[in-house]
Image (cartoon, rainbow, N blue to C red; front, side):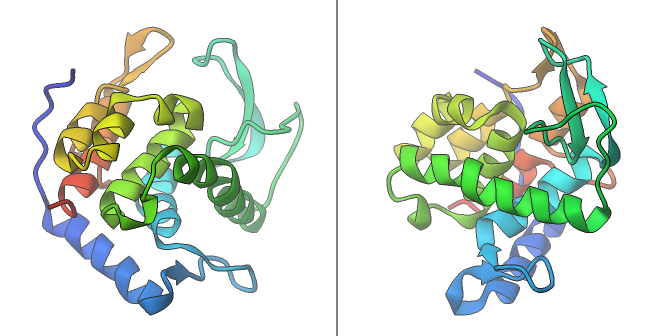
Length: 196
């Protein structure tokens, strides 16, 4: 199991508070003008974790770290991506929000009973983790098992173990899963800032 030290931070608490305020009683946030609002956990994951850490490419590129290599576009999207494909910033935003909501969050809701009762920061961390490692891997992870048991902080720490790509530890993934860096909030940092 991972042994990363996680601690709450003011910046992560501020990010959580901003989404709670934007969501209001309905629990949804309008991320994209004219589009259907997304659940609060998706909004927090997309804006605070996925976009800052994935990086955005408006042109398809071959991700050679993945095994096997996979064509990727926008913010790490690999679905129906072909060589030479291009996307607009608005198209990337729409693609990310709709895909995370339907394909990733939907699977997490199905595999984690009482998903909606879990802390917002934990749900956002799991959503970002699923986007990065796949919903099946996230659902089968120790982080999900601990979350199902209500062991939130232990779950936050367990998720930091997913810091490898292509069989080797990647510093950027370790920072993403842990306490982030000077400019970006880490998944563990966000998670620890909102769990009891």
